[in-house]
Length: 279
Image 1 (spheres, rainbow, N blue to C red):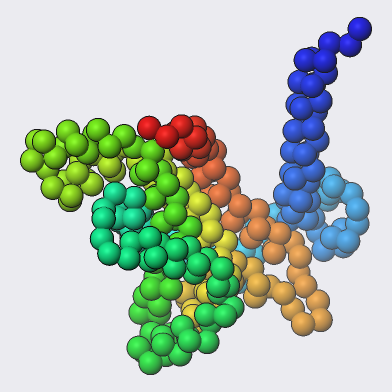
Image 2 (image 1 turned 60 degrees about the vertical axis):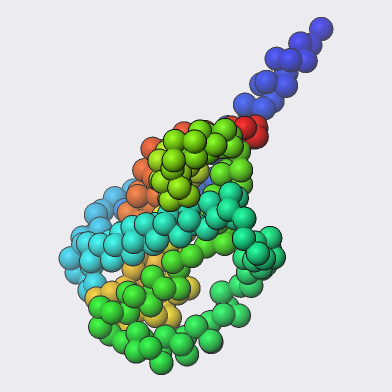
């Protein structure tokens, strides 16, 4: 007689293994292509017959801007955007979750409604505004345009609000008894208890900003300010494409995201477990 519990467990793990293998194939193919010579690029073999590091040499030194420059630009933008998201999302999330003021719920629904507006519809007015402010140029100040566009995320505000709602009100009441005001309560009580959701927001924001191509391709005018996704796009030619350097950039650009997920996945799990039970 078949043990249904074992069957379900084996089926579950087998499905996960098959799905993991399916999702890792594109990365393995990118890695394989990055070390293939040009005459093997269009061959179906996963392991190159004559592996070469030419593509990585091209990425690091023979093209401009090279990988270190693209990496530094992407890292700088991603880190600043993460800090901005944590500041504004935590403040707004706390206000929507705990403070009472006229029009709070209406304003919150408007914030949620903004999530349904794609960036493509906001492109023209935002670009015109940035031009009038003098932020679209080849000067380093055009980083400011990126930061202004990406400083606030409705999705992160929603996540922070929902998590703040799970924190017991007794903690706030105790702080009020001790004489703490809203600011002290936010800094000393709410933020320390919201570390799982803040880590989750930081990880998701970093990944989204690191992979973003839309706004950098529009705002960043100088090659010295290009990010990794925009730099990868420049390798694509009109009539032919040098695939090994593109795949080398893809592999290298994936490593920070992989490291971020490996070290931050426990925070995402903790947030999901914590928000599943309302305090």
